[in-house]
Image (cartoon, rainbow, N blue to C red; front, side, top):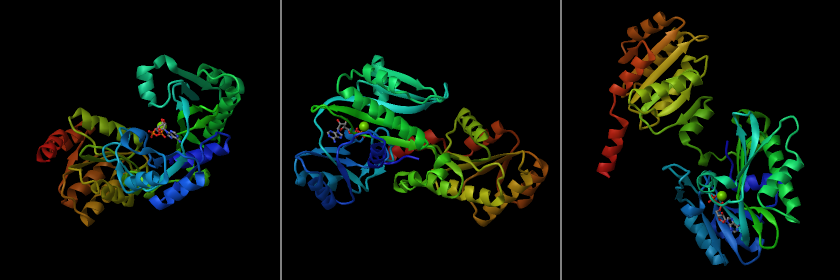
Amino acid sequence: MDIHEYQAKEILQGFGVKVPPGGLAYSPEQATYRAHEIGGDKWVVKAQVHTGGRGKAGGVKVCSDEHEVFDAANAMFGKKLVTHQSGPAGKIVYRVYIEGGVEIERELYLGFVLDRSTERIMVVASSEGGMEIEEIAEDEPESIVRSLIDPAVGLTEFQAREIAFELGITGKQMQQAVATIMGSYRAFRDLDATMVEINPLVLTTDGNILALDAKMGFDDNAMFRRPEISELRDKSQEDPRETRAADRGLSYVGLEGNIGCIVNGAGLAMATMDMIKTSGGEPANFLDIGGGASPERVAKAFRLVRSDENVDAILVNIFAGINRCDWVAEGVVEALTNNPVDVPVIVRLAGTNVDEGRQIIADSGLPILMATTLSEAAKISVGSCPRHEDKINHTAEAA
Ligand code: ADP
Ligand code: MG
């Protein structure tokens, strides 16, 4: 789960990270009021959307009077912000954050991520902040500092000092930098975060260290014990397909292709997507309906996959271990009888009671294409609908 910049800043502030004064606004009038409250003679109006790269896409505006603040906010509200990170669908701006303008001397990068290969939290920092970490890795790879945190000890002050030193921080600023690094780490660890990114972390001309941007992501599976964090969820920023799925207890990730997938088990779902690709097709989604896929869950999954209008065929791939193929087959038949679909449906069943399952589908008289192996199922799916690429080209020509 992701949260907004202003929410991440509030959290980090609670852990001792310094941020500029700021306030949230839901209208241009409120934006000017916020600017007035903050005071000073320079403000930054920032679109609150769950994506980075806002600056380059017009989502961060520096203003020098309240009229400019009004106009900048007015131009952002209700607009779709498409950044190079947001995907073509973009994110709609419903909230803006007004922040005091800061005189920047130097922009740094500070991030915390889970490093899977070492199974540790890793601090990633760079003296070349402001640009994305991918760009830094490309243009200034030698500026990147990586430091692994020993889970038995946690991040030590010594380690934080070493990181700050490598960022070129000296003198009075050292203590502030250590407090920022330690505070961000505690927020990461104490709140079940999967990512904390402060980019840029800036040294100001008057000698302070401030987080000018903040991003936090959290482990969905830990949100049951972090009610104060789950409350920060903003559904307007999520893919509506994924929100619907999450509300129904299904694990779904929307993709760009046109073959809808209904699969039980995450590993099998991944294999199914690979097989579709190998057969020359493009999956429209990842969907794991879980181990004990009841007829109700199968029906829900069908409704979900069909609500994506890009779907030209639906591939159901079930391996019944704990589950039973006849049970799943009943779910498929029930779902399709109650809500017939106008795209080909391909079903591959394997495992417990497979013969009974196949029989139920055959007896239903529904136009379901049966497959025995996964590769056969993928080939039939790809062969039974227009190629995803052709569709894109066709749409492009028509436009
Ligand atoms: P994004 O990463 O989405 O583009 P940022 O919050 O990092 O958005 O803002 C982009 C740039 O705008 C920053 O790198 C910084 O140079 C500038 N900026 C952001 N907030 C402020 C601020 N309060 N004062 C001065 N400049 C700012
Ligand atoms: Mg940023």
